[in-house]
Image (tube, rainbow, N blue to C red; front, side, top):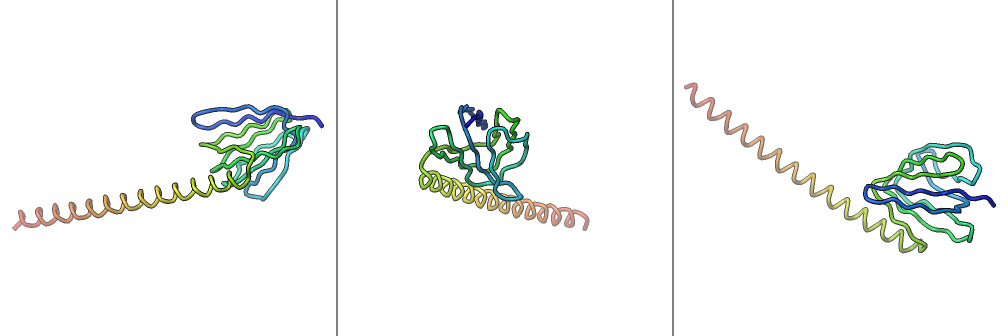
Length: 137
């Protein structure tokens, strides 16, 4: 079976994997597969796991927060903020879950910080309003 190149690009690194024979991912419409010779294809992958198989028949897994996929018939390019790559599905799944938990905690911290800033701003505006009202009397 004829293969294609898989190029992984994230914010800090790039990686090229040759002789990939199939790729399975998921976008907003659901799961799909790409084989060598597939028609050109562009889509946005949703957050989760994708997998691909090389000529050796082994599946490898990618955990992605989201990605843009472009396939031109010879090369499949995935652009993303970051990715995790490995051969152990359980390990990659656990790493993805952990990363999602960390991101959720960071998001909660950011929301809490914004709420505190908003409360401080409102308090300051109220104090300025009171000072302005007092000077009018």
